[in-house]
Length: 461
Ligand SMILES: NC(=O)c1ccc[n+]([C@@H]2O[C@H](COP(=O)([O-])OP(=O)(O)OC[C@H]3O[C@@H](n4cnc5c(N)ncnc54)[C@H](O)[C@@H]3O)[C@@H](O)[C@H]2O)c1
Image (cartoon, rainbow, N blue to C red; front, side, top):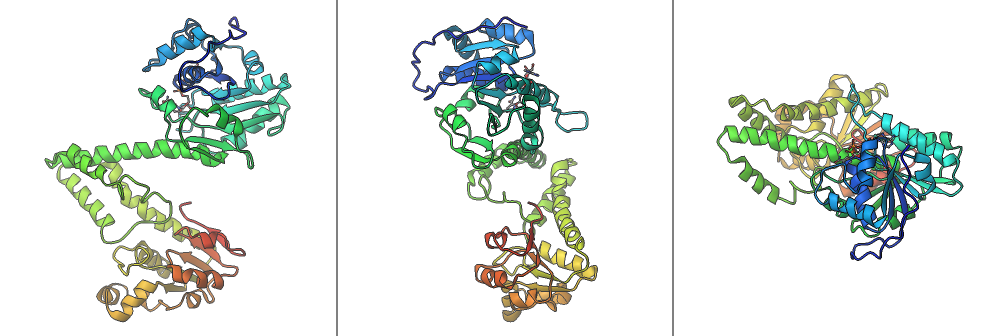
């Protein structure tokens, strides 16, 4: 065990404008990239920090006022934190927990051989903190900063802390998920300007401790259920990876055709309405229509011309088709019941049926012998006035025969309702017609979610 540097010397009056409003005592487990940056930055904000690690060389470096990681600005932060007496280091878990109010966990969560996340370091540190809590009378707060899978708080960490400490969550200790969003290379800057502060908390807990702790950080604070917050971190990193894969593959295809891909992407990024925006980022149902599938195919044909592999882009259409298959599978699980399909065009408010995933779903259900009724107000109008008439007559005459002109008629005798999309004027009649139906809401309609008596579920959420 290392010698413990305690008590903190009285820190000098902070001179920096960005100082914490309420000074806290914080132990930070794991002196890696996240832990050292958090330690240095929180100490600079005026908090008293104990960095805890199992690696003696890291503790020794920190005690000398040296950073064990290479990052811009971190050497100065660690040096001044140690010099001012706000940052100390130890391997003594019990002492660190006893002498602080809050423990951050920022140990590594690397990939296991099968791709799942290895929780060994998390388990070790959680059980050590749990044992240390046994001997501590005062209420303590434990905060998970490591990236961990959804369910970790409720299914793993909280039960483990309760088991090891003999204490009760919510009474003797609080637990929060608080994923870190810093990027190596700009981590100190990112610490002070995160996109948001996410806090996973128990129901009814407004996470006042963490709000106070981050009072000097100017970022919106979102408190949400543990699983949502744990998931948001995975969503963020997966999405960043997807953006890079897309940019690199599309760039290769364009470059192979002599296009200045960097310039094309510069223009692409100018679109803040559809491209760099929240558009198309809600889980719902498969895409379709006259443009998206066609243009993905066309981009892949360009890749084929120049022997560009583009494995990521090649999986986009199969992924989309899989959603229709999955929807059929979920309907089929309820047996061969009568189905009402609301929405046939590829999206609400258009009569365009080209490559509509709802047409594909209808074909699949019909092919499997399902009794089907279809309602789509826009397609209904097209049948009457003739727009899209040729397509309907030529491509889907068998589907047209199943169309009805009223949502209540579609639902009559049906047990399963697939809501692809419905216009505002049809939502109230829809809700009125529902009784004990099984509803697959592919559009995410709030009124349906609030409807009682139905079995309600989504496909991609
Ligand atoms: N590196 C990043 O840019 C970054 C950004 C955001 C989130 N994260 C996440 O934060 C977590 C930490 O990442 P990192 O890159 O800082 O890891 P890291 O590997 O750099 O550091 C982990 C540290 O934990 C220590 N440790 C292991 N077991 C311990 C124990 N029982 N007690 C105390 N210390 C122990 C290790 O010795 C090491 O110093 C991971 O879950 C990671 O996914 C990382």
